[in-house]
Image (cartoon, rainbow, N blue to C red):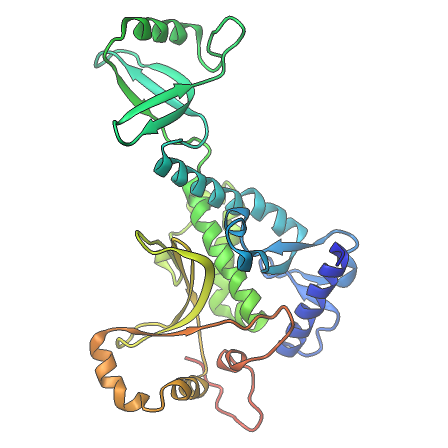
Length: 343
């Protein structure tokens, strides 16, 4: 399949899903991030592009992640790749380097001989040995064996320290290119696009997702990104597990059994859990629960004592425009039924 055929196939799936949700939209799609309405000819004009749901760092280890594609306008796709996607990958490379001892990227180190003395600053590569707590530094040198990434004064002071084998304190600074606020936004955006991939426009175009979209768009601008509201302050969060690991992305509808707790979508990927807002039609939810647990009403009081949750894995996709019970759960009208109130 050619790239253009692939994009047209995605266009057909998105169009079918959009018109099922909002009849009469016609031959257009909506960018799930900026909500621009885009016609088919945008494909040949390269204004509508293949948006990978997950960045390379996830796609490299998961065949399932590689299969997840949605259409994005070229502007949103390019900006996402430059900020959130990029920083997610840098963050994982930095963490992997910390775990293996080969620290990712060049680092500025400060070598301190005596308290209060001006530190020697060098830009180097650092490799550490967790067993004996030793480390090795290396850097670029010229033909005269002088460090390239450092001032002549610092080079001379470093050489003196090295030749005399003086005891010093060494501080290794964090990787300068890592910007943590974009990392969090990148995970939220990937989870949001995964939810769109599985649940389509009926899910993402609901007003409950407006704060998520606003957060993603705010993260695209390095100026406004400085004032990003932490996701915990609204109804979407990112959490890193200490011991859990998910080789493939997973999407689930979570129903907490504790009183007054909100339902939500949960995405698990690698070592991360991302929660997104979710709303549902109560009558459909009750049918969904009783289908898997006929005696749910009898068991509910005991289940509530445990403080657990009901997990409903979501595996349908909108790549082929298919329908499932989840479409009705989030509001698709059921023929002959008038109860479509949301929770």
